[in-house]
Image 1 (cartoon, one colour):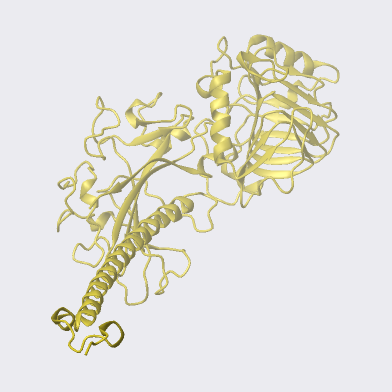
Image 2 (image 1 turned 180 degrees about the horizontal axis):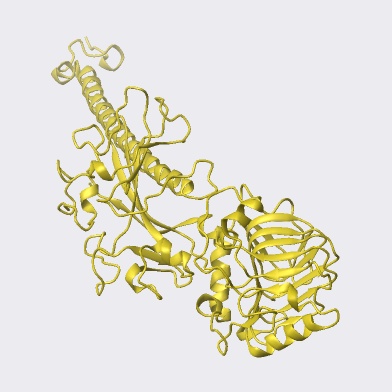
Length: 527
């Protein structure tokens, strides 16, 4: 009998088939093992990435908290800050020469940077080299005995940042403010020819740091004294900030900052450049230009609210010109009938109209001497301005509000013509085109009309200007208004007169020096 194996199959399964039983299960288990290994690896990589991101986020939190401390301090150095700081006036080692701003995270958070055993010691202080104090090793935190001298530390000042003294406070702990000496930064003296202990000043016009011993006209006791004497010199401060997060990230950084040093032009009304034009001149018998400094009393009487140190120069010309021709032009204009020569008082006799150019007293030197120097000053002020107006030459714009107030003076920069009108203002006003005034216009501070060098006043009224008004023509009157190689004639026209006055006041003229503190240099300590 035959059997049909194709239909009914073999009665006995081959051995090979029996040996393959369970292979599918084994392959599934191997696959699961492989997938589990991959999954565990991905989880490990994810945990590692999360940890890296968390660490990076934390160190960035510390970095920006450190910068927040630096910026709060820089803001509070301004004279018109809502909470101005009592800035150090001497070098570390002397009493009250180190200032700290403290930012606690609550009542139990102890921040005492002068205590080297505290949670947040100032272990960076020894990195700075101050004459008479012990310095540390570069890059190595200070130890006991190398920290800030307790006798030099003024009372701590609390931060006014949001949420300070709460758990939500920014993570910077303290900010230190000191003045800078010639050799304060290790290995980088400001000037190797000068002694290490010389105070460092900043010259705005030259945009450079310079030891006090090299400031012209010295010796001076301090940068402040040099500035009061009319020099381009402002103290340089070191501002150092420490931030520490709850996770332990630490960042410490430093600014070198200085206030703008705008040495005011030595005249009540300054007309820099050749052959100054004053036509028409004020006709009122009440109108005057007075170069006798009214000092603190005049500052207070005209609405000044802060403290000021009057200039050591009590008298400047009522009108300062750039050459002898300018003197002749002004004398002729004010001597016409009715003669108003007696209304121009100050240095140089009556009328007080003085040649301050190269062939005269030479006081229009330095930053007032050339178009490029004057335009550099204008650019510096433009970059530091609180309010900027972009107008056109021949298309004046008007202020949208007060141009600063006595309680809050500001730097206002105008590119082009400015229709000031009868507005009141305070601080520093810079106009590169023509400044149009009328009626009861008033301003306390420094007015710089540099560019087209033209002022046009119309109407009577009681326009009063305390400080200094200065004109200089540094650009051509023809589009595209290129910078001139030498100064051209400034022009001032004053129709009417009324009870208007231009009164020199050194406090108001110097007010711009305390409105902005610029960052001269910045660095981060890498430990």
